[in-house]
Structures are given as C-alpha cells and as structure tokens.
Length: 421
Ligand code: NDP
View 1: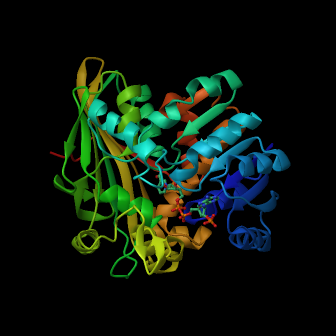
View 2: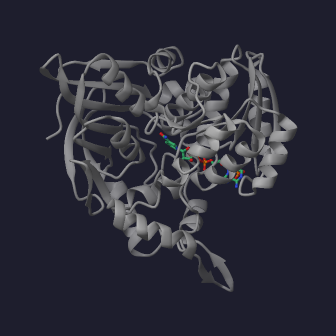
C-alpha cells in the first residue's frame, strides 16, 4: 500500500518498525533513519533474518535537528507518511520538513525544547505559564500553531499516538461515542508493575522521563489548571493483574488536548505508579544537580548533567530480557448516559516477557510502539484523514480500537470500576 519513513531507532521505534513489518499489507516499504545508522542497519538485519515480512526495508543517516537534512531525506525516500519517533526536541524541524515536502506527519510526544534556558523559548514559555497556569516544559501550543500551514498544504499531522498520550485519548473518544452523552471526569492511570532488577533505570528515554516526573504536577478542573508540587498527590490503587501500587499525580500532555476536545469535561487527572526506591534515587539525583538541563562547564568542556546521567544509566532498550511483570494502563470515566449517571474503566494489561518474546523489547516500548504503528496505519489507509493538525481523539476511535485488539494491545471495558478518591 505505501511507504513510511521512521525517524528514530530507539526503544519505541524498534517496536513500531517491527510492527510495521508484521503489517506488510499496509507498509510495503519502511525506511529507518537516525544519526546512528548502524542501529538502523541492525534492526533491518534482524527483521530480514526472521524472514517473515514482505516489507522492503532501507536505512539512512539523518540529523533531524536540521530541517534541510530531513527535507533531503524525504525527497530521496519519497514516503507517504513520516513517523517521528526521535525525541520531542525534533518535532518542529520534522514538521517543517513534512510541510516543505507535502508529506503526512505522525508522532508520539509533543514538542519540548532541548535547551530550556534558551532566552527566546524561555520568554514564550514564561508568558504561557502565566496565561495557562501550568509550568511543564512541554505543551501543544507549538505544534497546534501549525494548524493553518497543514490545512493550506492539504496534509495531515497526527500528534501523540503512543499509549499515553495516544491510546488513552482514543479510549476517551470511544467512551464518548459508545458509553456516554457527557463525560464529567477522566482519571488516566498508568501502572508499570514490571521489575528489571536494577536499583535505578528508566523505561524510556531517561532524559525525557526524568524531566517529566521531577516537574510540578497539575490537573484540569472546572476550566482551569491546578498545579501541585512534584509528587504532592499520592493515591493507592488495586490494578487488575498487577495488585496494589502507589501512584502519583503528574502533569501529562493528553490532559491539555482532552480538555480542549472533550466538551464539558469537568476534571482530568493523570496518575503514574512509582516505587519508593525510584523516587528516592530521583530525589537524590535532583538534589545533587544531576537532573539539570542547562549546560555546565566540566574540565573546560560544556556538559548537560541530565545527558551525562543518561550515558550512565542502562539503555531502556536493554531492559527487555530482564523485565518481568505487567503494565496496566487505562482510564476511568464518570458521566451520564440517557440521563443516568455511570462510570466505566477501559484498560489494557501488557506482559513484559510476552513483549520480549515477540519483539525483543519490554512492555513500555511495546505499548508505545504498537500505537505508533496503528496511528501511522490510520493515515496510510485513509481511515483517518483531514488537512490540519489533529490529536488522536478527534478521529473515529473504532478502527483504531479494533486494530489495538488485532496488533497486540487488547483492551477491556469494566462497567463497575474501582474509583480513585
Ligand atoms: P530513545 O532515546 O530510545 O530513542 C530516540 C531515538 O531518536 C534514537 O534512535 C536516536 O538515535 C534518535 N534521535 C535522537 N536525536 C535525533 C536527531 N537529532 N536526529 C535523528 N534521530 C535522532 O527514545 P524512546 O524510543 O524511548 O522514545 C522515543 C519517543 O517516544 C520520544 O519522543 C518519547 O517521548 C516518546 N514516548 C512516548 C510515549 C507515549 O506513550 N506517548 C511513551 C514513551 C516514549 P540517534 O541518537 O542515533 O540519532
């Protein structure tokens, strides 16, 4: 059917690319590109050695910080869709290149600048903090600002097709379509009950992960943001197939888009589980300055502490063989249907070792990589189409929900869920 160019070959991309190769009726050709082309070559060899896919796979070297390099790559590969699974830092350059070439764009995380001390970015950020009331470094304003440009170019940008954001947002569209006339509250619960045996490691890119969890929390209530201190709000929840875990309220990007796209929603919260050891390590690293994102001088050379820390921590892609246990990610909704109050939970449970057996990765990469493939398939097949910049909850959820069941992330609707107080 078509050709995808995947930018990035890290933990998430490795799953998404293998899933594209499994789905060879849709993805005839896959080009894998990142700065380290040897990683892309290794994945190509692995897929070809398995001999199960008819997709033609090619690789290329690109630095996606350069719009010109991405344009040159798109011109030579001629993809139908670009799937951006590099880092949030590259979102805007890749969107610019897609615009220049008239090619559809898909990603899994919203824009965040690499250098948060950059004065031009900082001035806009500080204005947004005051106007909007949340201080996270990432937000949708940068990418939503491309709406008119994508409309005028007649191409589609799909933002945030991972699990959260991504599947959680599609679950919400599905709940609204089939279970509610009005959704009042949404609690998104992200539980990783996996154990990798290391004293400290992150399940996806450490820099992005640590930035996210060390920041202030926030939630949406009655039309505005309420901001909390990091890890200030803690709850205990008994997760199906995982058990009782502590979870903490975080700011998360889908709260922003769901607040905009789900009419009349009164409250949206996001909780993620963390063990005490993870939190103690993180606090200690923060206290000694290792989570700093601005450059510091060391022996005559500039280094960014959080990037140095990333080099020391285990590569998330290497956690696959060691991680046992399950993830349980889903959403609890309350609202009304036909004048009656109701509550439901939609969730997926994913087993780390099952993922490893299938694609050689742990469940965090799997639960992000599968939806990245599915979102790209929605665009490639024309099941989701439109000119402009969209979040996933703006489209018909049914074909995506069906694809989740088919491609490894089956979901459950619980009509009598345990609630979060
Ligand atoms: P990794 O750090 O494992 O991989 C990032 C990849 O991007 C690497 O292959 C890297 O390769 C490549 N890359 C980085 N900079 C550039 C550049 N300038 N040009 C080209 N390629 C580049 O990250 P993950 O796989 O863990 O995460 C990928 C994305 O998925 C991130 O944006 C993350 O935020 C998002 N994510 C989304 C989730 C969701 O549920 N929505 C959950 C988890 C992650 P190289 O250095 O060789 O260029």
